[in-house]
Image 1 (cartoon, rainbow, N blue to C red):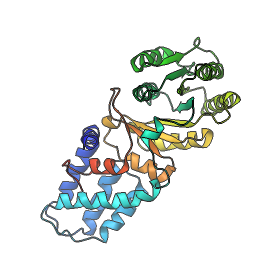
Image 2: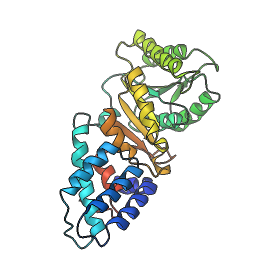
Image 3: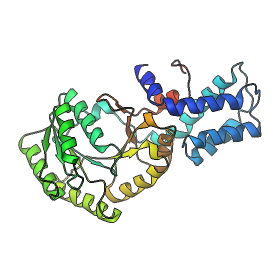
Image 4: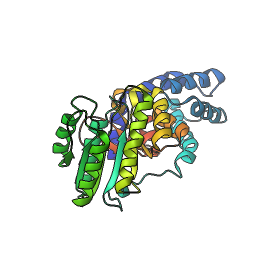
Length: 316
């Protein structure tokens, strides 16, 4: 219940917009006629729930045309929760995420490469991940391999201190591959549990950025053939559908293994999480619901849908 309460609070902008408009659309209705279904479709798409998902959901709703209860809004919310879970279950059944296993990895050092364009929240995500690993009793090193952005290392240094992690950095403009090489050698020599690698989010062209990230991966394999063990892509939820295009580019170039969706507390388009699940084939592993160290939450599909489509904390 604590997770649901935190999700409902973090998703407040998306949730209140959705529920308010749904209530207007169905109050007093005893059947889901064509006009009502079209209105529901528009409301869900406006929250950045993908068109394909919404069309499938509305098709399922149309087969349950009769509203049987006294509270129309509550009934529709319950039906939407049930049907969305059914639609997306197949998308997640082979991509389940176990947070306990993630923070207690079987390999040492466990190497996480964090990618994403500038401004998505990579630095804060790295700090929060490091904090969670330290809480789990793991020793953590952070590699400041975004040497192109001014103040990137300084920001990471602040987060590393907050999290209780080591930081490996070089002078601004240094070769990112060299930073990663040194950091990974250090992590191996000092028997660190976890190495988290920050990366650049912007070079002169997208092609240059992707080639730089590929080079970093090649450098890692010279020391640890199976590194990186995770490639986490950080996306800003406020960018909505634009985030999907970013995700496709990173996925195709560097083999993204999981997504961290940040700034969900600052957008009315939180439904983009469901679009990512259905369209990209990449698991959403964490969601960001604020700036605090504890505000990076493992993603749970059922809890997310319950939080998005319920006014009460008591949901079925």
